[in-house]
Length: 285
Length: 348
Image 1 (cartoon, chains in turn orange, green):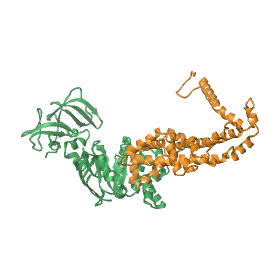
Image 2 (cartoon, helix red, strand yellow):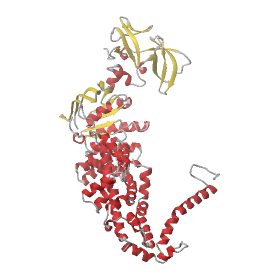
Image 3 (tube, helix red, strand yellow):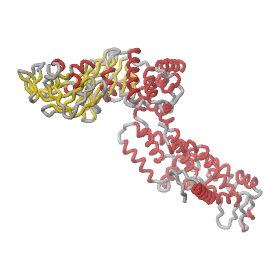
Image 4 (cartoon, chains in turn orange, green):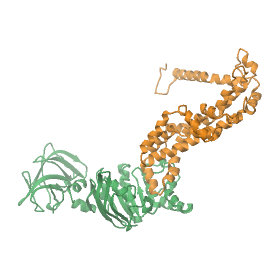
């Protein structure tokens, strides 16, 4: 290992090379399957099934991706991407709005059984979607929300995690700020909108990234409530492309779909990276 | 610009009474300092005037009208907080103009008022900065500016200088006082620092355990403290308090005999300010000096009286003492303070 360690993080000479080597190796290990998927999405079906497996991209990129986007296996991928986008954004935005408001209520208002409500919210952390899936289905079916965006979004919108996070953040905001706003004549919602919300900006961004990916990756719930293929989301649609029984799978198109399914979360993470890291690391006070 | 009247104001948290009836009449344009140790209720009192705490009993009148039930913004007050409470995401100008914007003033008017206030506080260069780019003193000024632009009837200050370093504090003390005098706005100022209280106040109110021990001008409180608490709280180093017995021929402190200016009889508490003691070869007080602290202009001599009581004298100039030197001190009778031993109230 490194001999010339001058600080906790800073390394020189061998240490520097070694750490980089390990990092590059790690990246390769993680990246290789993605690379294979990409390669598979650019070749023909016979090329995939014939050993050895190709490791360099073929010449069918445009054909395969066009096929995936506009016709797909069951539904065009473009439709599924759109569905997923609506669901993920809906869930992320809805969760943020609801948890901001409930955290605001819990921290800044004294109402009867305030703590009870907080703990009730907190308790739901222990109940993931899978546990309450049957009653939730019953409710959604009762509201005739099967095969609809509202059905996809609403059951997943309440978030104890986000509420808890915002509560913790609001608790670190000095009381004097709320009092100063009161003296300035700002009502509660004005204070929320003008002061609390801008101060939570980085937290909101960080949460948006996490929740967007959470929403994007939902599998079980969309699988249950969308029977109409045109309402399929990409993650479940991908699974349904897999052949069952003796069907022949169109692997290049499936792989192209996989690659396409990865792009939006990656774009969200990269575009919000700066805010995301700031939201996790420091808070502006 | 307004008078403020506190009429037997009380505050309880549950069964715990923290303000036990405070009455005060503040004249228009007066600068009142509320001073006391931490936990004496001074901040609570101020927050009740601001409307941030409800008033349990008693009446608060601002400008002659009852204000108990009014929201802070309707009381025509402005408050400066200890940690400034600036909105971190707003620029200096936005911070100062926020209250006016909420009131719905036109943008141009808000900007003009903010500019005028910034001019007054020498903040014109900083209007576009964010609070975190400012030094402590500048933040303090912005907090003041936010109070000024609203043109309130009453200024409320909650220990505004305690986060500043000593030198800046002296400077800001003067600035706040000048500004208040220039604007002629009634002010209530809470501090635990008796120097701030002495230097800034038109009148001060010394609080202890939810009660006003004394209300008066700083010199009043200094020269005629109404109680042992006020006597010891105001003045630095604090007043020597020793047990004494008043008799026909004077005050007996152990073997020492002092004059008896009030003619009090029986056991009393005698208060002697360190700076009022003068060296006198035939003086009645014999101080065995244990420690000398030369401050330059004067010297603090800590030691014990013959009876074993701790005692401090402050003498002008430099005094050096070698070991357990015994110093004889005297005091003018009119500078002696006599307090009831039981109640701690001033006698005579």
